[in-house]
Length: 115
Image (tube, rainbow, N blue to C red; front, top):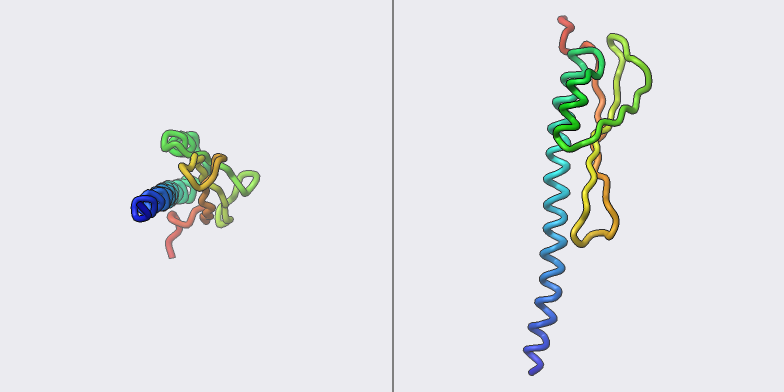
């Protein structure tokens, strides 16, 4: 009888551990996707010298949100910072929605300059 109770309790603990591992896997996958989106956006902004509507649409179509940190229009050689963020509703980690974000910076005109 005691082993059945122990088995049931171990299943409850094992299920919570598996759900927590699933949350961590999802957060890791979202962070990797945001990192690749940020790399593409960084390249585009450095090449174009500004944040174009196509770049914003690319981020929006990826299911993320573009948040500029640097205000104004940057000029050649300046550093432009931005955040790519996405909301995630965890399974077991939290009752509230979590924002996963990646902050990156790029140098305007870096890919067009020749040494």
